[in-house]
Image (cartoon, helix red, strand yellow):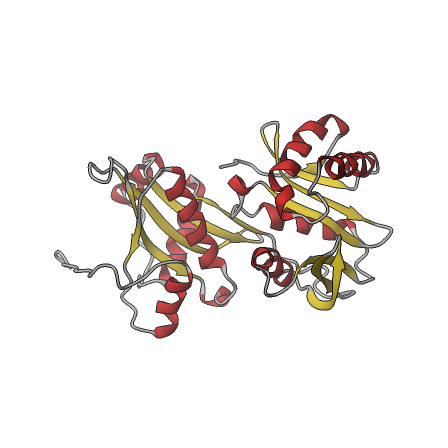
Length: 308
């Protein structure tokens, strides 16, 4: 995880780290299949760096997200995130910064994979979230792509900045108010028990309270608890609870972003499975969890309420 993520201009002294990321993701980018094409791309990146048209996000000195943009053509040229750091809002941060630097009085374009291409699921959803619309079908480097367009003056000052992260101590009040959209009827009063519980959560390395921020406001959350285990080759498992989205921000993928972040945590901790319970019988809610990768057929859940 990266603390205090920020977007900055790539510098020529960053080129080695930048190109390490390019090599990691080159399989996903038509036109970067050979060593020669990667070296040619390096020359292009250096030019963009010198022109201050190359943006990046770093984890210490390692570049984990990159974006190239063209003022001349008013377009996003390249956007990539290290696979190990995806689902952290890095792509959204880079895209938001680039849009601020381009001419919003003109159309902004970007090309990505076509609808039925599995590689296009994440980037197409990202661009649509920022207001881009599907445009003409094209081919680039002999590969079928599609152009997306953000039309002039649409969402220029209303592009949301979405960040998914683990909670911090100062988030308590916002989280308690968000839980009013879960099953809570009121926010608990300030007490020693509340402060102690929050402190325990913050200090427990196996307790991950995940939040999704939109323009600095926490609008969705879930909890992922990693439970040590002596079976399954001594591999832990993860339990997901308290999945919630603010009523004004539903149907936008923010809860899914939180669940994806939880899955990333489970994988990092070598968990062999993830589990969750829902009290909802609504088919839309059940399909939401199915689409997130969960199933309701492998096991039967039982619950016993204690002193409710």
